[in-house]
Length: 363
Image (cartoon, rainbow, N blue to C red; front, side, top):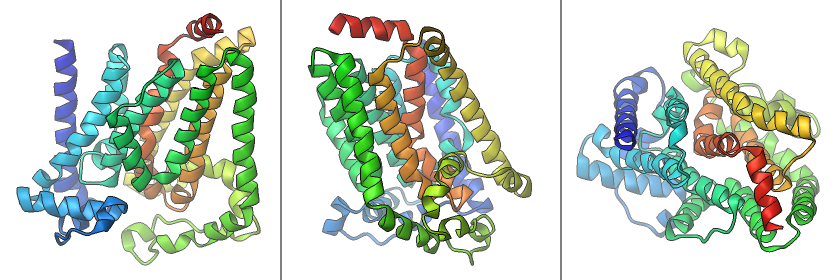
């Protein structure tokens, strides 16, 4: 009964956010591109296979034609995101953390953006599936299934920049899992992957810096809703400013609003409080592992490099999209939020000694 109650409760929460988003939230602020998707003309073109916006327009038009009203037309992708959450928790058997997970995955921004016809709902689905891929491969050998390939396909057309780092981590883990001396190979290969990423970024530093300077064109300063929240691109205007601002940028593009922005706008205040809760709980969940490392001077290189590649990599590619606008930062965060939640929960679920004992057994 506990299993059924959890999912009935979470389904009702998703339905609530769907109704709230369409009937209330859309009257307060812009509901992204959802209404544009639902009101798009129905046309079938080859681009729906490889272009995320065209796919969203096509699916929105189909669902609106079938269901007629916006609320009902959002249900299919709401169910898709719901399944992404279910799949991650059920396949990894994280039910003992169900209360914590339901809380983290019922926060307003995640609830709203993943319960409507949005790219974030699709992102929630493929994040949930790929979190299972990563954790199971981290624990040992894992054979990819159809749903894994489907999730990677969706990630490729919706967020290819995320897939770059997820695939790196999966390949890294596949290699480490196949060798005998896992500790040494995990360290050496992990360093190689990290250094190669740094080299690629350094090699293309001029191009990256130039592209960053042009990011402001994607934010409409004349729009009264978005324009008030859009920040100046001045930190990026100096030579290599994109890289100089990166340490702070990675944080604020995940967190969302600054303190001044929280005090100036109620919606930013709510988003800021939500981000404080998220980061606070994340810190609490990783404290046991940090204490273990501090007192034993032992670290699992496979876990360390996997998390570094995925988390730092995704935050880096998210940074240019979230730095200039707190609303965009929070909204786009929902595409990988479930992945981060599951990865952090995994650190809490598996005690460090258990991982080290598994490593010794396989060596």
